[in-house]
Figure (tube, rainbow, N blue to C red):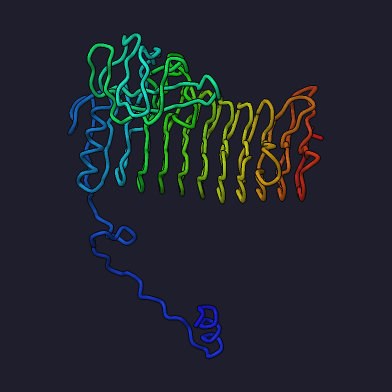
Length: 424
């Protein structure tokens, strides 16, 4: 009997499918992560420059605490007030919360060093030889980069140096890519400050992360940021300042149900917040995003997301939406002083790749765009965009941008109920 027929039969006969009883008194049961007791006290390990469970001033002390708490099934690592200078990322683990004391807990990246490889390393190798090992130590996080001389393809890998003999270093993991001198292979001490891979169900709270931009080479948001997440789920980031990274503030790739709220992103070179490829249901609220190239960059296939009540100011572009970023809501934000656009819908490769069915509602736009430009620009074959109930204000003398610019290949663009002052 087909399920649909069975449901129809229940409706006709007045019968209803039974609902299972709710869990009223949960017990901690092996393997059950969906329903657990709420414990009055959980494991907490403190890290500090002094008077803490683990004493130290770099990533090794923090990582030791994270790994210890993870081994015992989860809990919280509380980083006390102080400055912690990082030569490698702090790697997150499932169920381990990382908290600090806000502006008093500062994690800062040490200056980066870059050198060419002295010898070729093949994809099966787990070691590299550097031309100049000055500034490199065992335990350092590094980034290997090479550009294929024939195809122009960039290869970028992050690893940790785990042993050495002179200029020759062992890596924590095999390369699985070729790094050859003919492709300009280099090694740099570049890494995210806080990084998670395949981690779930944790919080990052009340930390100040400083990328030391003036003394570090650039590493883009596909690989790093003050916080970088890859294949993570249910991560809650709150009360974090991410500043001065020569790349992104916070970047997450193929991560679902990430919440970023009450954070400050400031003076990061590329993207303040980067909900990255394939990330579903991001929530971005009550943040301040300023002084970056783009405030919020919806990357590839970011869907069913919410960006609300953010202050987005002084970026080149306020919000950028593009490749298959569909069904997102941008509402209640204040977007001001964007040099090019307040909101940009990117052209992509045609209609099947564009960011359809997004809603831009009840936002406040102040002094965005250049003379002759547009506050909201919709390019390419983008369809089904709703721009409703927003306020567009322009007070700069001699500049009268267009409120909304619709490209010739766009379709079903609804613009209604908006208030305009000094804007076409």
